[in-house]
Length: 146
Image 1 (cartoon, rainbow, N blue to C red):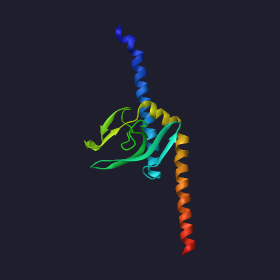
Image 2 (image 1 turned 180 degrees about the horizontal axis):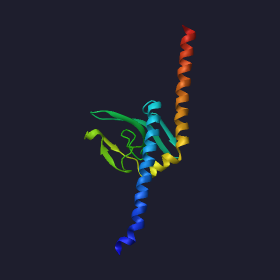
Image 3 (image 1 turned 90 degrees about the vertical axis):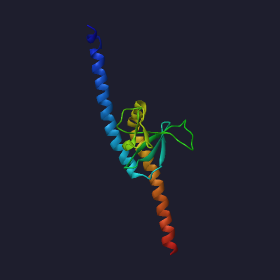
């Protein structure tokens, strides 16, 4: 019976899909919170992967998330892969706007993001600390000179 041969494989495939979807939902939530908390374009590098707070916009609306910056892409035209809840490694048109393609991170990139999440969040916090310090310094200089 050929179906018996693939029964366990099919069960494992379904389990992988279920776990992937759950992980993606959780990570998309966290990535959105990070992207909402820091200035757009803020970049950090953790364990050899560069992450950036990014906003995707279409003719209907937008959303913010963290993207993986493709280190091999041209610096003038970087390629981003989004922490998103679409299938890993896929791409889609945001709000069916054919001018706004969203490339979704690969499964390995989701796992890297998940496994390094505390360090990634801390790296974004360090960037925020630097901005806050600069703002305080500027405020104090102005306050004392006026």
